[in-house]
Length: 295
Ligand code: SF4
Picture 1 (cartoon, rainbow, N blue to C red):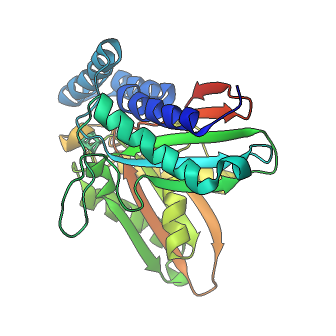
Picture 2 (spheres, rainbow, N blue to C red):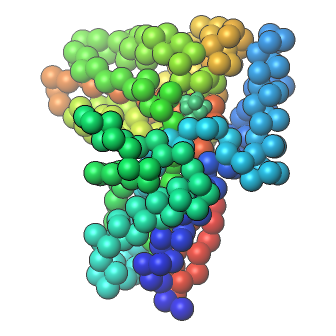
């Protein structure tokens, strides 16, 4: 049966629920590695509790954390996907409907409210929420959906600085470390640290956000950026904040950088933190209605 909007809604619902219940294998493996090498007894115990929490959530169909987050979708439209027949606006509405359905049927806590009145429609949706980020690919017949319920404790720890070019790479490193020091235990460490470098202010933050979608443990293909990631990870873990900020060797599971060229008078840096639960889920919906699930 060819793809239709109902299939997109049901897939969006399934992705939201799966992302809240199951961690991607790369994040689980990173937590297990951190647990195995942690030297501080209390930090080891906290990491062990996190791993046990994952098992309970998985076996009993519970949420890993009470925060249902801000629903974020990345959508990549393949050239052969029938977007004209379905309509881009209608697909965005189908994604929001999937979020509302998951919220009503699970049921989930609604974490989304009006920015001024703070009125909560109890749907986890509202103006411009879910966040939907579109890209259009040159090939393929699929609509690729990736979903992240971005936790608030970590999202509140987002930073942007327009550094002067003279600050150089040293300035970039100092800013990232300052952000991690300011965040302390608030983003529920060990975190996945997303860093955006270059572009304009908005693109720079988008790059930091893009970085945290990459599987943990996968270095940037550019060797210079990969070296920067490794240097920053080592420095961040030397702070000793540790799991949940209570001391230990593992303050971050990974640092991931994305970069763009920038203006000769600018040196923008953005930092976004993803909490230990690092939740995300993905699916590929083909034009013929087949759905493949992954991360
Ligand atoms: S920051 Fe993450 S782990 Fe902490 S409360 Fe929010 S969603 Fe949960």
